Length: 305
Ligand code: SF4
Image (tube, protein in one colour):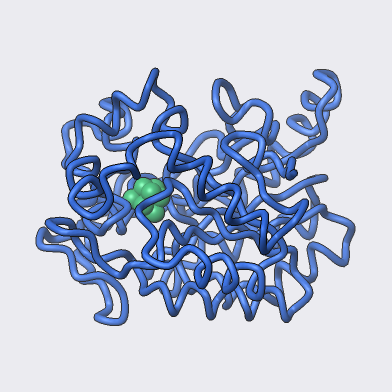
């Protein structure tokens, strides 16, 4: 039976959304989802420790493609709920062997994308530790690949567990999203954590010997592209640049065009809503990270040029 909902305000160190966030405990039947569509070439499986996202009312939530998933929302506004999958680690241990076998039969390595429709390190992770328990479970049954994707500097608290997985032979990448060097875009909320804190997290991950990637996804208008990509080159091993056109899972970025993001981008830099702008930023990135720039889905799959 579903326990009564608890209400948990976000800590002030991260974002302060205008609507209350409701946190539920819940369970999940199968924590490993076989990938399809956009993620198919990135990893064999995706894994969501939580359902919903407590960053949904921050900057990334304003254009997050998950907000268009009626199935996931079940009538709830995006960013107002976080369902905590308390049995995630147990579910992983129950199914990992069979899912690894399925991946092998399809000719793919058993790879996990953590996470595609939530953030694995929301502020509530400190309380519930679902992702931490999952990483422990993966030590018991390691996947071949693990791609951690987050907006949150709290990922640094997982460094010892991530290092243990890497030492166990897991091919690991930690991708921290830093979409721009600007702290705010006009008319849009603040990001889940400042640009400075996310860069600090990247430096800590890299210093710990973890393969660290900055995901500029989606690419937002960058104020000083030279300084930005110089900083990326210092803080990370590679960069992924993804534009909402072609990157939001819809033809020509139509999902994102329904949000407030494109107008905010145009206000700052009109060219930033075009793929020509992305290509310009890719060239700039290559000046500082030669051979370590991934574009779109190739970048998420770890293919750089
Ligand atoms: S952290 Fe990810 S899943 Fe959560 S709102 Fe931002 S983009 Fe969406």
